[in-house]
Length: 194
Ligand code: SF4
Figure 1 (cartoon, rainbow, N blue to C red):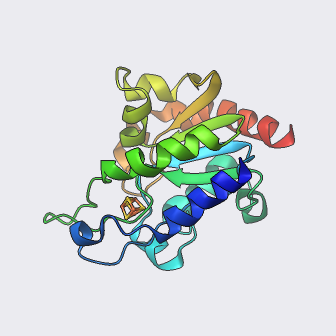
Figure 2: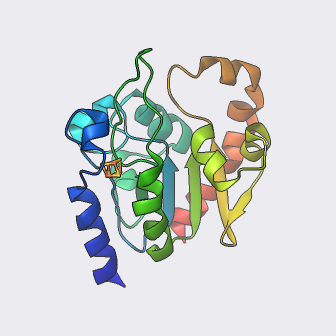
Figure 3: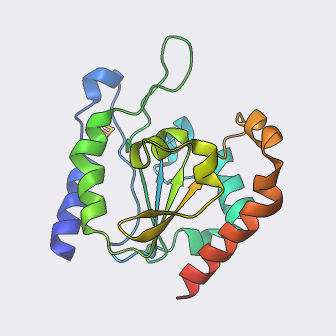
């Protein structure tokens, strides 16, 4: 199984499927081991991560790691703790309005489905409404955030996007930072200790 997983990761890292669509060289990013305790799935790497090639080395990452999870880089980038992946493994560029393009679905179908079949994790963390929609298409995002959900019988925490642009959501949902985040932190802490 490790060989199959390692081959998969090597193929993801070499992937250039979206090159023409993007109009620039794709930089696929994923990180972690097959037995990582937590599988974290977000939308797509940011423009900063396109350069650093290391996930969550941007403003969103600072908030996620240091404020929400309350862990340092040693624990976050321990490949036995987190397997960090996304609906699309590459920064997809901007659309004509200057917004990040929608993550190409072909990446989920080609790579993410296989990653999730092989990884032997304990819990999932799903970041952002776009990723939540893929795993829980019939449920409301705000309801998903405030309860424990399940994928393959394992807890799946759903988080709002930690982007500094997501200000309105936090203003409208103060219970996330004041209450729900404390429960989520506990689940993460217990999972990493197990
Ligand atoms: S987004 Fe996914 S499918 Fe597209 S080039 Fe990157 S790794 Fe390949």
